[in-house]
Image (cartoon, rainbow, N blue to C red; front, top):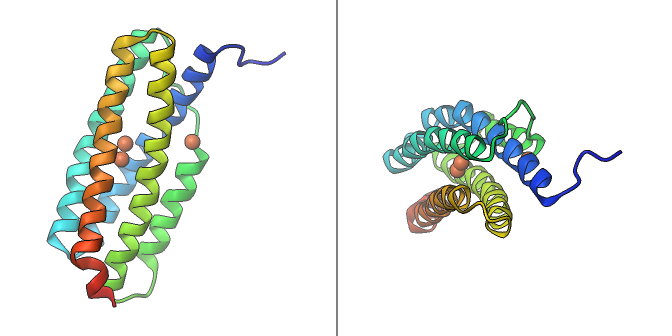
Length: 163
Ligand code: FE
Ligand code: FE
Ligand code: FE
C-alpha cells in the first residue's frame, strides 16, 4: 500500500525534505563564511545563515498550521550539495578561485531550494492552505534574492579576480 495518496501527503513529504535541507544548511553556511576572505561574500553567507535560521522556524510554523510534524527525513540532495561545498572549501586553490568555487556551490544550493519552495508553495496554494502558502512564498523570495546577490558578486568582480 502506498503511503502517499494525495497531494496533501506529497506536500508533507516535500516540507520534511525542505526542513532537513535547512537544518543541513545551518551547519554548512558558517563553514562557507569562514572560508572566504572576501568581506562581501562573507557577509552574504552570514546574512543568509540568519535567514536560514528563520526559514527553519518558518517551516516549523507551516507544519504547525497544517497539523503535521517536520520529522526526521534526510534530504539526500542537500547532503550531496553540502558535500560539494565542502569540496570547494578543501580544494587547493588560490583564495580568488576558491571564492568563485564557493559561489558556484552556494548557487547550486539556492537553486535546489528555489525548486523545492516553488513546488511546495504551489501545492499549498492549490490545496487552499493560504497562510502556509504565504509563508513558503516568503522563504522562496529570500532564496531568490540570495541567488541574485551571489550572481551579482560573481559577475561583478569575483569571477574576474579568479581569471
Ligand atoms: Fe533556505
Ligand atoms: Fe531533498
Ligand atoms: Fe537558501
